[in-house]
Image 1 (tube, rainbow, N blue to C red):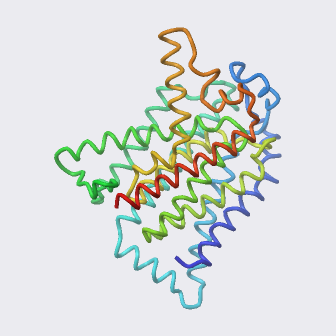
Image 2: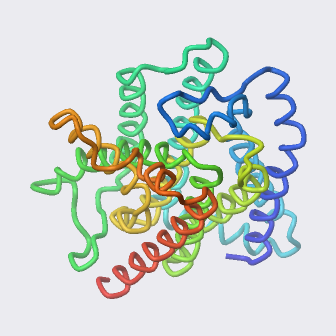
Image 3: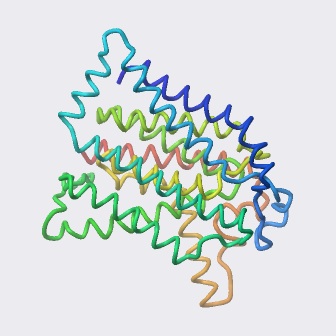
Amino acid sequence: MDVIIMLTGAVVAFGVTALLGFWMIPYLRKLKFGQTILSDGPAWHQSKQGTPVMGGLMFIIGILIALAATVVVAILQKDNRFFNEFISHISQDRLQVIRVGAGLIMALASGAIGFMDDYIKVVKKQNLGLTVKQKTLLQLLVAAAFLATLALTGDLTTNIPFVGIVDVSKGIGLLYWPIALMFIYGFMNAVNLTDGVDGLCSSVTLVVSVFFLLFSGILAVNGLSLLACCSAGGLAGFLVWNLKPAKVFMGDTGSLFLGGLVCAMAFASGYPVLLLLAGIIYLAEAFSDILQVAYYKKTKKRIFKMAPIHHHFEMCGWSENQIVVIFSLVTVVGCLAAGALYYFGK
């Protein structure tokens, strides 16, 4: 893909997201859209009470504007080479375009669920937001709609390292669909759980976006390259305001959008299974929470000092910045492992 187009996407996403903070954060404060810190969290988090939430709108808007800007720049290029390549890509590899487009819509729909949840919490003053059943139903519907779109448009294969291309339209391959449904649902919520420390979810997902950007270059999937590049730029812009001490939180609006986004990038690559390694921190967050709840119900004892696992390390004395750095480095290792799995297993 044209370097100018890639740089345009990253720079515009970063710039728009970062600049939005100057307007949106004061506006959210004016509306009194502040975070309510629950008493069952770490005691020192009470100082974050009232920090504006729904900041995820900043990078959602930044990413969308960046995607639009790249198309405009492509059209305005004198030789229109990228635009012609893009049109050719659409005609020659329709399924890849559908994967990226449907994935972006899934991410936006997930963000809309998060927005409803945040709205109920901060405007209606109901701390728990949507009920578990309501959120689960909506997330499963969004994931099912995405998978149905892939199936109905003829996307009936997936790639698994050391196995190869798997036909998911018949026989045992049909198990792919319920597994994929729970895969998406699980990662949506795992990314949501990762958003519990200033800058953590943003930093980890930035690393994952860079991984899919590099991976898409190897696969020559232009649409994924563009989406991953804009995502990385938007998250970098958000970190300007979200690193400790955070001036704004992404809220469920942002974390559920990112959950849908990482799944969109994974499926657009054709190797969704690699997200199990690239998203190792998401899995650690989710499983630590599941294990803690299950073990406590059975024994009335705790495995971790507090779950999800980033709170455990906080209780062990780690600073929030230490957690962000180390969890991001673990994500880098996970991404390298995913790349190695692809390389040796292709």
